[in-house]
Image 1 (cartoon, protein in one colour):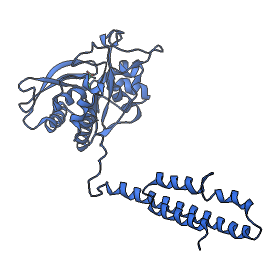
Image 2: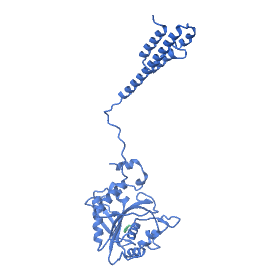
Image 3: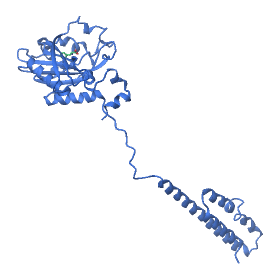
Image 4: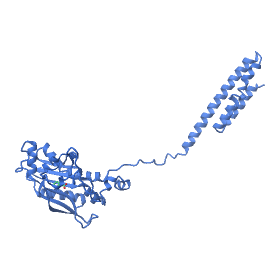
Length: 339
Ligand code: PHE
């Protein structure tokens, strides 16, 4: 005959084996092994048993408890594993993953990379200078008179200590010649700052690519050839390039460059893209004074310099109607240049 404890144990094991979920398992645990569970109740009954019966039933009680507890543990583990593999079954591992969105270069950076690539091919090296400059590098060394309007507080951002935000990248012409003798062939892309009224074509901060080429026998023909090649590579071979006489204190003769191309949105209109000219002998002489030598002898060396409006070039190239778009960081604008 089976002891009632054995019957309880078997009933518990059967119930556990058939439990469909964690709640059913927990209910079985409470019913059999809980504080007032039917197996637990037997430890109370022990007191009422005879000396002979007690060890036998005690042993049976321990075995039943252990067996039921182990079965509960196992069943719960099995349910957990089943629910996990069920969740996995809903995942189709043959589907393509969610791609990470790739970033893209800012249109001005793309423009810059193209320009640098073209000038590199012509043997130009990269040079740079600080955005915060002194008046000497920005004006005096560039043959710009003390009363020149560009030096006006209304046109230029001055710092309290008298320094300023460079109004053009021509400062790098001077810095390059201070630190190295001729021949020189550099471009210097960077920011420039002017107190302009901000509108679709003017910004307080814009970007230029300065160029400087100093060697023996450099002529206006070299200047024209270099810039025409650059602009036609950039805008297409049927681009017309016009050199219009102009005035800059640091070049003589000086020109402004306009381009026109049917391939561009601007069509038949001439658009100004650069200032340029032959380096003024007074600039060489001022550089010599700063260097305390005669490295840039104007009788021996000649050179050309240019300043290309980088924002302007990018606006023409990418058909961008407003210079302010470059700085607004509107993703609807920037995404159009992600390829
Ligand atoms: N620095 C001039 C400007 O910002 C452009 C320029 C550069 C002109 C070099 C001549 C030579 O307008």
